[in-house]
Image (cartoon, rainbow, N blue to C red; front, side, top):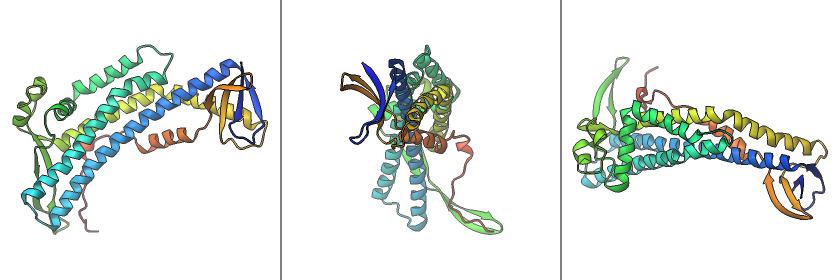
Length: 300
């Protein structure tokens, strides 16, 4: 067997010889970066689903400010649209939590009990926050028995700012403990913690904060391994660039049996640049419950 860095294009003639250990190191680096990107992609999906819920609430409030439509069909349509967003959030959260342990373990191939450490961190959030426990139980409920949103209210009230009066429209969504109790498989220890009406937006915000905390924990755990994985590939790209003026497009590390290529590792980094951009955009979410999202006009 021989190993080389080369461009997988017809017009390239340049090859840089590497060792079998180099090739295995590049394959390992690629797998680490792939798993790190998977974490960020699933977290980004989670954040998008959360934002969709917030946006839908604002859209309904804006519509209510223009047309007071309280027909049965309109009420049904609003509740359905909010159920879709909340169920999407719950599904995205489950996807994230189901895979985060293995993704982190794949980023730390030499570490022991990594999955157990991540599981413990998730359990800490579960124990600390009743909203986390409720949202987990609610996900199981909507998966097997019923809907998440039982009711929607659209209150309006006069408020004042700088001696001006404004009619403020808002939307609240809730789940009823009585309805959840009809599901015999709804977790009893969670049910007894609930008020008669559970504010679903407040619960969702606290849940997303916890998931964001878990993601930050995962990022911290894998940061050194991921940085080294990227460095390994960058050094290989640098070795090739040092001996030729050819583009690095299509660069790979390849294993050959005679002249037949038997295995290859792509040495591109554009996709890892995406991971870095996702990390920058999807920062840790804190104090969501203390934030007020409004389109109100404030006097200068």
